[in-house]
Length: 329
Image (cartoon, rainbow, N blue to C red; front, side, top):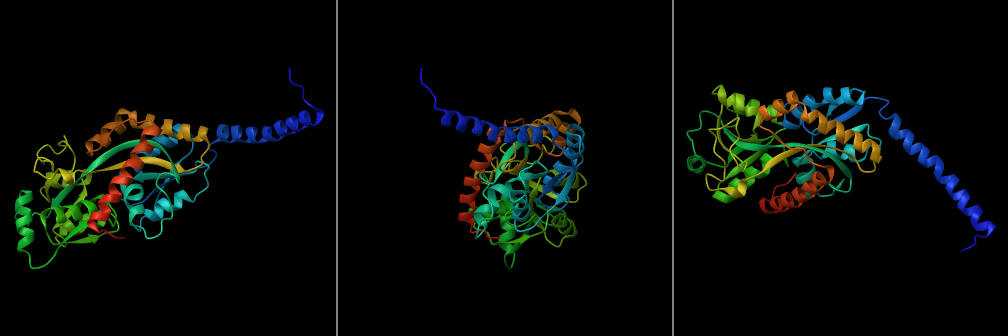
């Protein structure tokens, strides 16, 4: 049996005593959390899909966690401003990100100097769902198919403006892909959020947009816009008469905008687990699940590790697309 010298035993004891307060502190931080309101940063102005999800979830999360969940809209620079704010916040669980494709999968590849990394700067806690984009037209556009839309665009005297919720949004890149695939002259008009863009589309200031599907469904039902094609792999039950891009022969345009909840890297494991569980349980509530699905979201319960893998894979995919289209921020 090995023997220990007194000095070795002393060093071992001192090391154990030194580590004990840290263990107590970590346990206490997890046990006592949360002790104040939690901030949920949305990287778009009110009216977009991420904001819609945040406002549906915040009351349920506040109820489960025992503290209010306060939404802070922080748009700008292709969603990178809000994402950077969260990445640089204390890793204590009090600042969360309504993570989405624009902030995590697209903007980092378009920034001249990255201020955060989509995988290393965050811990991805809960996937909520994905929503397809849709080609939306003002009713004055004389087109009811992709081919007719392309012909009409070619008949215009110059590059046709098309709107999206912002630079580096999924709508932005899908529009650029569309122009490349059909050899069209389009000019991207980035708005500070889907809400103001949609107002201009309804008013005829722009006559074409690539936008998230949910908020456009009631507008189509009211006859105020035309929805030409969705970018999902399958038709969306809430818009059953709108074909997919794959049906129309443009499978390369398939894309979806995911939404989830992420936090700064380094959040204590116990806190991260509580947030993940609270979000996943909230999304399983019939009222919330039905509200999301009614808006066109394809919801899915997903383990955090699988969500993190999705973020990394989407970042690589959208990075390649951004390079091909030449999109910039």
